[in-house]
Structure formats: structure tokens, C-alpha cells
Length: 204
Image (tube, rainbow, N blue to C red; front, side, top):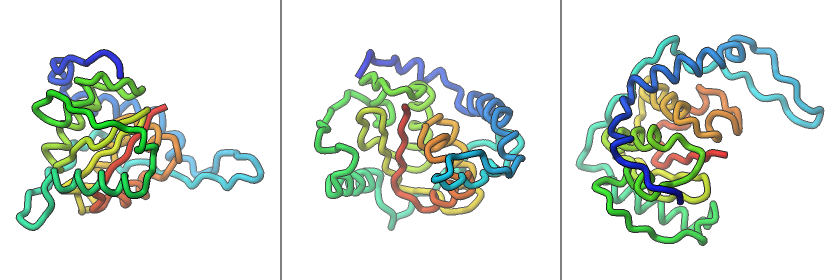
């Protein structure tokens, strides 16, 4: 943990504007790779990376639409409890070294800012995204340790267009496991988000 980040910094993030600018720069850097299907050279014993055609957008397409609340779906608290139980049961990600933290926040999406989480993530942007995901999908921060973040999702998107939009939001979070490791083709990553009730991110 580092120094707390003022929530005024999060309030100041104009999410659509920031993501539109970030996508334009991201697309400028990646377009040569998306348009060239030639496999990148790799050592002889390594299988070549699959070609990534990139997101199916030329300009920032906007945020993924909110998923409606339903009477038969889990609440955000139930989804968070389920994810935490699964993490504990599997013993993955060094969770046995974690501690319960109580944070004086009005909403869970502000917790990382208030504890000064010190991963390499762009914290003000990430917290703005988490606020938006909390509102649109019932997302909740469940665990953060080292440079890893685990988020539960009560109302995940299910339509192809919605998951493409959401996948782009995940990419623009700058998380290294989505952008660089492994270099999963964008369409494959988006398909994997259909109905997915947990999202994981990490930064080097």
C-alpha cells in the first residue's frame, strides 16, 4: 500500500473522454500488428502466437451498456461472496497470505484509492472504471494483493456486441495480463467474457 489517492482525482476522470483518447493511441500503436497476419518470430521450441485482428472498431465505440437487474440473479454481495469462497477453496494466487481490510468507503470501487494500492495500474482511471463497472454490472472488488486484482460480477454482459465493448474497456485498463501476457486475440478474449462472473487483472 502507498499513499491514499484523493477521491477528487477519481471524480475528475471523464471516463468516456479518457478512454476515447487512450483507444486512439492504442489503435495507432497496434494497428500494424493487427493488419499483418505474419507470425512474429519466436524460438524454435515455442509455438507462434496466434494472429490478433484487434478490436472491431476504428473509433472509440462508447461504453458497454448496463445490464439490467433481475429478481432471479445474484446480488453484488452474493456474487462477491461466491468469488471469495472459490478463491479460498482453490487456494490460488497466494490468497492465504491476504488479510481482511475494512475501508471507510461509501462504495467498494473507491477502496483501492483510499488504501493507496500501489500496483503499476493507473489508479485514478482504474477506480473510475471500477465505479462504472459497479454501476453497470454490479462489479465488486474482492481481492487485491501484489499487483493482482480480482473482481466479482453480478450482471455480466452476454451479447456479442456488449462483450466486445467491455473487452475494449478491459484492454484500456492497461492490465498486462490482457494486453501482453498472454497475447490472446481480442475476439477470443471478448468471447470468454460472455456471462463471466469474475474478472482478474494484473500489472507488472
